[in-house]
Image (cartoon, rainbow, N blue to C red):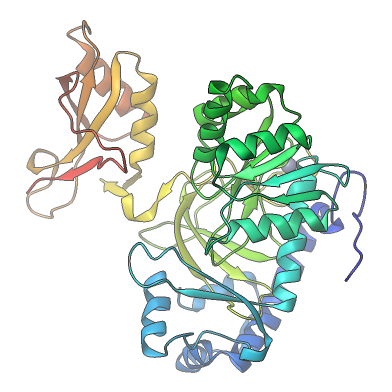
Length: 443
Ligand SMILES: [Zn+2]
């Protein structure tokens, strides 16, 4: 077993504070090496590079990577179907694959993603970096509340916090009462899990008469679903636990992607692990910092299931300025702000339903329920392009009659697109316990 120790009191790894220029140099050198690796070991990438007559040595700048095609989940799944069961993107010999996790499989057959021994070691180290940047140390007791069966989070958290030296309780995401009892009995100080399970635990503990504000927990790392990126949800968790809540963002394919430090100013990308591009979802041209775009990732040193220009479909806003914590790796303030599939283009303006929702939630007279309706009134008949959006918004009883006009004005000012607002009485719009359909297309 490798013995590891942190770089300093403050940072797990010296990589975290490299000057931006050094990060870029590292990325370029690693990208060249990684492209050589996938060309030699992955039939999927070998044929793609050959088709373009692209040689890893052709990569002279980071921008040159854009000559390569992006890979989407659909491409990956199609390759699995053509080369069952592991796919031709696998770049390690089977004897060298140590672990496989699967996608959740809600939209098809679960897709496998593999790790070599070196990949697992790297993963544990990166995850240790996240916990360490949130103030977790070797004297802490960490209770891992992510699921273990099939899900990627449980083993990731366990290996990472073990690496940083904490005492790990691999608890999982069931048996709520036992979790709470364990937390109090063994003095748990750090936890991780999904935001919804965190809220469920808090609620149950309150019902049992032992609110979690009375526990020793001070650091909560959440992931697996949006949560800490939403200010209201974060505040809710922090209040009910009496602890700091940090947003984590990862995917099956990239573990981890970005995790918050103690400043809670947006997750830091792991820029020495994955090269990140933020692109306009329509044109695929890079967007500047501060502009929402789709995140595209390339592994810099993954062996078993390496991905080159992976289209995450997640919309993020990047900030490459130095964080107050001293780390130089870029951050994603607000976490994942939307999905590329949900984006609307209105007269050349990219609009995400989440941006509309923010304005509506701020307007006090609504019930928070709304629908975005795309019909003929907001569509150019000649081109079929959107000229604006129409909103149906439920209002609370006794709302002023000019509410719709005022909201339309606020939306126009904020989103710079034409908005028509129709106000509906409370309880008119359909409710759903799962994901509510917010965008409705009417021909
Ligand atoms: Zn920071």
